[in-house]
Image 1: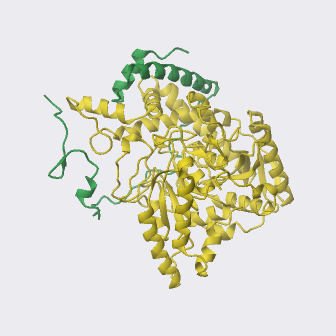
Image 2: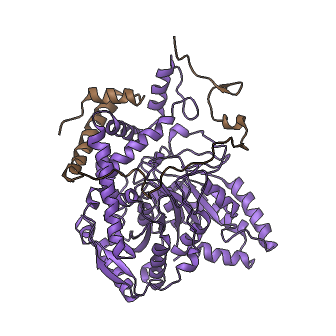
Image 3: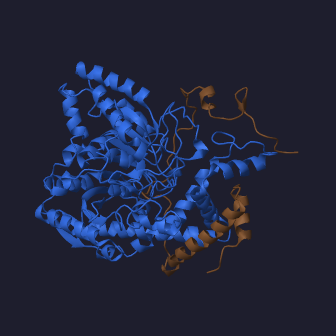
Length: 488
Length: 97
């Protein structure tokens, strides 16, 4: 495992053994060396970041660090507004968009003293599972440069794995934090819907979007959550529930606790190596004193069709604001207002955004609304009840994140439906709103990382982090923990 | 199930104010047909007496006091990304003839 965790770096900074400026320069050097082949950033911000690192350094010398994140180099997925820093959503539509304000999550991190490295590449508008939909090129997988990094937060996961930043903030609408984390061998947490503010996040599916950290370790994820979680008056769906000291709570023993095991999941075309890795993890949890209980999620198999109706409906509505007038791409030479809308949206949006706008418009249109949208909203209720019922019996559920490890660049990009199926184990959790942690649990025969996910009750991030951390500690000495990406 | 026709694609694109090339119309018709066919599996699910879920954590309407809040972002910087501005107003092409 890497030495470059927030926890370890913070200790060095506190003891004045590590310098935030030097740390930031190391990260920039890494970027110089590998970014041309990796492409994990749309925009790199050395000027802003170095200034922040210098401030951190001053505070460190005076013993006045703002938080444990003070002086830590951070990447931000390019769907979060960053004041005076270009924010593209990886779409040509926003190629020259520079927000006048910070997203709440960015503001909180700045207040905690981070040094921003840049804006991470992703699928345009966060639509995708491979970053191949980015208008700024695919982000490659640090473990095998011929493979995808996953998506949509592929740039975030790849940058953390390749140590181009120490952690990154991603967004997860149907798996977009967890799947790339699994593909790149890092940790990703999708918190409960409403746990972290969405203010300043370029909206994709507003009833599904969640903001969370991508880190090297579960302990780091716990630490970042302490900073970014909580009620925000600018996002009415955030809730007034106290944010626990996750870094302390994760130290608790999991002895006697219960883990749900969903047999059907492993009959849904999961790679043999993934099944074996998760079965091994199961044994480790048993050694730690946890008990496995079989649970059923009979409606989970309807997750993808339900998700692709609700999500595209919300996408078509959220992307309605890009009209070529207020901000964003504006077409030249249109004769009248209506033509200006059509042309700006035609030229500004890529193929996947167009496909989703069209699907969403269809499922919301008169005559189809009940058969598709309303039907999906009802199935969503059943999926949510499924998870509630299962989680009444257990503390968390253990599941695969993905049916396969990272696939080849180009393998699925011509077949949208195949790409959508990459979310088969993740999307239903967004429909249900539960928190879920994706963390590494081994490697396949091609030495590609395998992830597993730990799903918890609403607002019980504490438990998923607790189980994740205990597993991580118990497997510290495993040989695969020594493997390094090809970019190192 | 039936296929999505080019005509349907054109009608929907009009509703969405979305320009599409001829090639895009063909591929979108094909892909929509495929994806919507896949979604047919939802018809197997009995949803009689099931309420739709609009808000997953069970929040009801969340209100704030209806009063003006001053912003520290000046109007010029709010309009900084707007392509066509005059006297702090957004300019659009003529709406009515």
